[in-house]
Amino acid sequence: MTHLIRPMQREDLPDVLRNERSSYVYPWSEGIFEECLTLGHECWLSVFGNDSSDKTTITAGHGVLSVAAGESHLLNVCVHPDWRGNGMGRVMVEHLLKRAQTLRASVIFLEVRPSNLMACKLYETLGFNEVDIRHDYYPTITGREDAIVLAKELLDD
Image 1: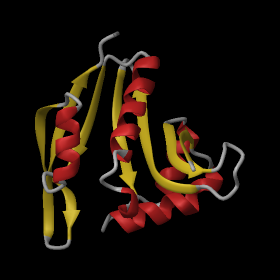
Image 2 (image 1 turned 180 degrees about the horizontal axis):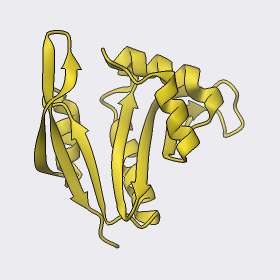
Image 3 (image 1 turned 90 degrees about the vertical axis):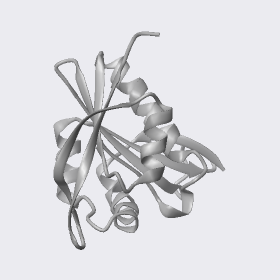
């Protein structure tokens, strides 16, 4: 099976929602993904299949990036639990970093739960730095959790 990252389409939303719901207690809704597609955000899938025309692909993950006014914001990165731990998240984030640079963003921001240790470690190894804390940003089963705001300068290589 070959791996590729390709643009997300509306017809991909059932697979995207399946991954999102298997990964998060408070997943994004179909409406949020539809809005991202409508607004022209960078919406991408990580898929496996036999070739690019294969109709029986497996959606391993997805990512959403917004870019405006020279800045970018990594809005969502999700890897299905069955595909975690083998670099799929890193591949998606690196792809989104390249897209942000291609679209002339000079900086990228994101929020991450402090409890998401795998994601925090990934972002650290990719050169993100903590710039702020958003208090009580994320809902949890027992209340609210802060978000760490991370940023990375995107310099032309």
